[in-house]
Amino acid sequence: VPDLQLFGIFTAFVIFIDYVLVMTFLTAIMVLYHNHFEMKPGLCCACCGTADTQQGCRKGGCDALCASSSKLETTTAVAERGGADQVAKPRLVTFFEDVFPFSIIRRPPARAASVVIMLAVLAPMAWQASQLEPQKDAAQLLPDDHPFQRFFDLSAEFEVSNEDEPVKLSVVWGFEDKPLDTDGVNRLFDPQNKGRLAFSPDWVLDESAQSGLLSACDLLENSNLVFDRKTDEGGLEKDIDCWVRDFKDWRNANSKIFPVPDTGVVTAVKEWCDNAIDVDGDTAQYCSRYVGFEVDANGDLFIAWTRVVMGVKMNDNVFLPASELREKYDDYEGLVDEINEAVGTTLGDAFQVAVGEDPGGQPRAQNKWINMVLQELYVRMSIVGVVIGISIAFVVLVLSTRNLLAASISVLSIACALVTVIGITVAMGWELGSSEAICLMTLTGFAVDYVVHLSHSYMESTSHSPLERTHDALRDMGISVFWGMLTSFVAALALASCQLQFLSKFGYFFLLTITFAYLWALLFLMPLLATVGPRSSPADGRAVPHTPYNSNTTRRKAVPDAIEVA
Figure (cartoon, rainbow, N blue to C red):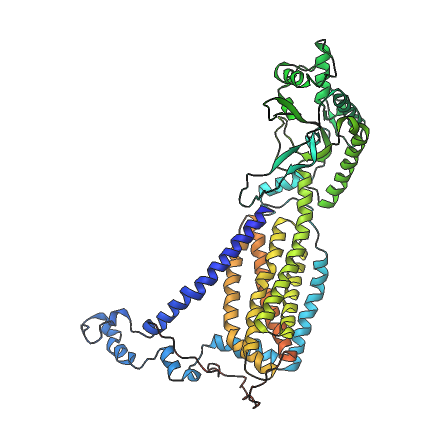
């Protein structure tokens, strides 16, 4: 689906560009700030020692600030003299390092209770997720209470009646088994190139084919699958546009033979199209809807294809789920098989395509069979997308942690978050349509971030016991993961408030994903790692120093040398 491909390419470029900017521009700015701008006095005291003593800035303590500025040290200077351990940290940082969730994780009963509670939440969500079904109603554009959306919903409640304009089904002859040659077509880079029509070189509208076309129309006339439309007199008649009947009546009215020999059929049909009036008094100017004229390599005109159009028992305004459409599709495929069996030897094999047409014969945007295929495709793409996403996440986790146990626990946490989010959306009444399919395919990418950060930090810890390594991971990434979650949460909240339901659904889905990915990472992944996570062994065999569980100072690891700017 080109739209989904474009979304994926756009997202990939955004993520790549963001990564490049973070690793280059942001780091450079941070180094410049720490080395040149950190702990500098304000602008009003930029010229310490020369400021006018009568100026207002002196009253704010300019001299005191200038005098004390020599006592202030940058974090770079603190790191250079090895004093990083004595730097006090903000309370919020300490909270996510030592209080939440470590106050739960450090106690084995609370740790076990956290895992059990999360699994208890997972059970009903897994049942809800198993109830996810393909879309049964038309995609909602606006909120439920919007007047336009209420009109759309009410219009879709009515099935087809004899006074409606039904979906039109075209039975077409003159093409190869694969009617559209798509070799070399790439709609992503050339959206206008849809392929080349593959006409059958052996198909000719000769005398037997004209008679076979009449027989096909008679067969449709007797089919219960064809729509009965109401006439002006109040009666019912089959909704069939059989041009060859009008062509035959016109030929007979003008004392001309029918069927026309194949040597003169092109001229005869062209004459009828250009000049004739059918038996009902209507012009035949729309015959190009039913007969396709093409020019061969020699410049000669020939009839490449023809079709019969009939109304079928489907309302064009009513959205039908893929399961119902598949049943109807099989019924009309059976009808086409009957036609091919009856007249295939004289007319060739036909195929059918459903296209809603307005009274002027112009095709409408919706195609029931394409909608059916898309609905089925969305289901497959969602499943494949989630499986591929989890598989890629597992590979990334193995590479980042270099430990199968840590990677497996991390992937389990991601999978549980996915199931929880899907279960909640099903409980909210969502069905699997185009919007939901896009959300599901991006779900793993949103859910993997926090898990990768925490599990990688766990494996980087030099502590020995799993509990201490968990504490180190929270010290390293606890506050960073929280701020990442919070900023994404606020962005998703703004998106969820949109009136357009596609954007609103994406926002809600994003919001649920980051929320539960964060909770599963802290309340399930970290307790599991603290219980059964891999241990580290010092290279020299000596015992690893014990780490205090509560501290408001920076972690005990050695701080690298200060970064110098050339």
